[in-house]
Amino acid sequence: MSTPPKEAPKDQSDAKAQVLPADPAGSESPQAEEEEEEGECGFCLFMKGGGCRDAFIGWEKCVQEAETNNDDLLEKCAHVTAALKQCMDAHSDYYEPILRAEKLAEEQAIVEFEKENLNSQQDQKSDHVVEEVATIELVKEKQSLLPNESQAPSPSSRDPK
Image 1 (cartoon, helix red, strand yellow):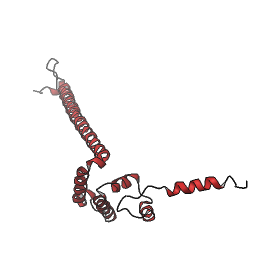
Image 2: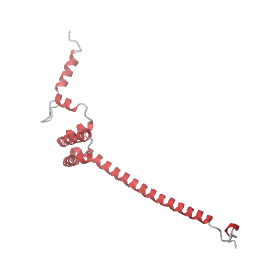
Image 3: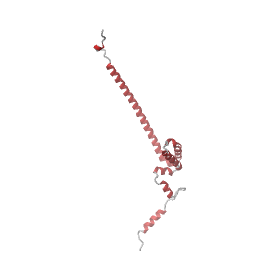
Image 4: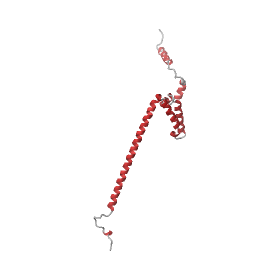
């Protein structure tokens, strides 16, 4: 008759804590994993969760080195980026959301490039039209400065004989 009701919930929470899913084979201890993942972005965690973990870590290191040394990122890391892309293609079942987003971004970049190219062509046409109008106006102005043949020559333009 003297069992406090607060003890039963405590026992239940302990039971829940003990029924944790087993770690996947070859994973680190939960403490080591937490230390490594602390402060990492969701994208990085996702990338490291698939079959391209090592390729991604290599790519991350290359990017950090390039930024630290003020190197050209695209030039310096082209080989590791290509290796990471190949790995992601090989594991496309896992990396499909990233690959899809990358393809969409590439398509959008092409559309933007084509739009800028079209705008540039239109600007060039506009510039050409403006130049033609300016040339026509200069010709008209020049013609208006020439003496008009229908008018009698001014007295200063006559030859004194």
